[in-house]
Image (cartoon, rainbow, N blue to C red):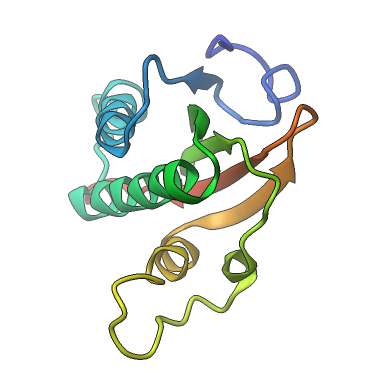
Amino acid sequence: MSRPDQTAEQNGGMQGGTLAAPHVTTAAAARDYARSVVRRQWDTASRTAREEDVVDLLLVVSELVTNAIRHGDGLAGFEVAVTAEGIRLAVHDNSDDIPEVAYGSGALPVGHHGHGYGWPLIIRLAREIVIDRRAGGGKTISVLVPLRALP
């Protein structure tokens, strides 16, 4: 686990220090951890994240972690980094397959088929979406979810 005072180069390119989430094996645990990082490290005495932005963050966390579990041959890791712009997430899974929709337009699917909404939501709510293959197999999906301070 990286220390918060490490440089971006030392912690895999994630500014503000990467924090590997302890014991995250479910989307619910990942959401709880991400919310706690916002409250403990992004919020300050003079800055508090807007709740609607935190809700967006939690939705992105849910979608990425659920995708890793369901379609990525299991969740291999979950990391959170605080940046001046918001929260950077890194979700590691065990599959080399890169979803085609990850580079889509963000358009929601036509008709209700019970699936296909996750990636369009991620594309709409996150920035700087990067998918890298991991040396030992699998991939890492990294995204920045912007946070704004309450006025």
